[in-house]
Length: 297
Image: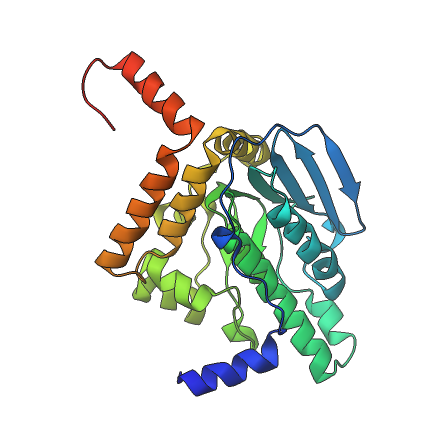
């Protein structure tokens, strides 16, 4: 796509006040733990404890299918986490029998939408993907039952993806006369290679949780009744890691394949220099030295 065409698409789809990526915000560390808080909406529940923000899709009667109303709650919920300087990790899950069954096609078929309404819906979905993928804290997704279409896009936007063995993961959009979102058309070939990406998008290849791990789309597969607890354990572990190191790791990994060697070396050098000035660096060096008389990281 030419740069002029890209500008046209962006001006029509995206609001003018799109926020910069959260990974690029100033780096802070040494954040105190949070006590438990909770807020509940009709479609999204949020819970915060010890630096882990738990956002749960809560529309189990529709297998957490996304709709205008769900996006209207989910986008600000994720934005609030991204803006919270005390947040250390995010856990995203779905209530009931499935993580997310994709778009609510019944709601789509129930009425005609104006062009503006369609654009707002599409952009809300893209905002969700952008927030999950660019948030400066680690994102863990707990994925069970079905992760279809938009649900699969959200699931794979996590840094750590814990799936049920018997999960059904699929991208049926092309066969339904629609299209994927969340940057997936570019991310899938990087994750699984072009041939497998074509299987997923063009041939509607459906994967189990175990297959998703084998293909490199998920971190680990566990029994369905263990997904939530395992994902929460990993989120708590990530929340305890030095925030500045985690943020730089996310930034570097997000640029994989897009940065030149020189750009990567500069980023790594800047990250090392920034980390060297923190209490976490001093504590880590001291702890490593206590375990090993010689050598280094």
